[in-house]
Length: 64
Image 1 (tube, rainbow, N blue to C red):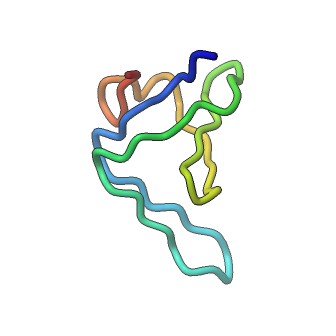
Image 2 (image 1 turned 60 degrees about the vertical axis):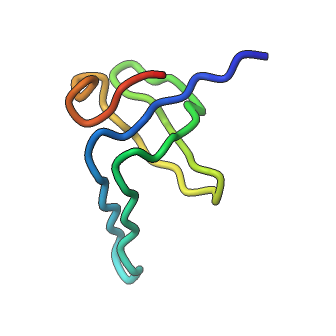
Image 3 (image 1 turned 180 degrees about the horizontal axis):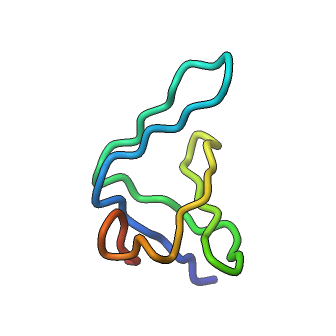
């Protein structure tokens, strides 16, 4: 089974009320979990997942 993966070109900082921010470093590889109309739901090996916009391809991330 082929797995789609992206690499972050810029660090990402995830913030949510009442929780410590999560920083994901540039160069991190993330698995594409789901495709939405304008974004991918991506996740790392620790279970952190978030949306990344198609419009940011080759700016903030690239597909591997």
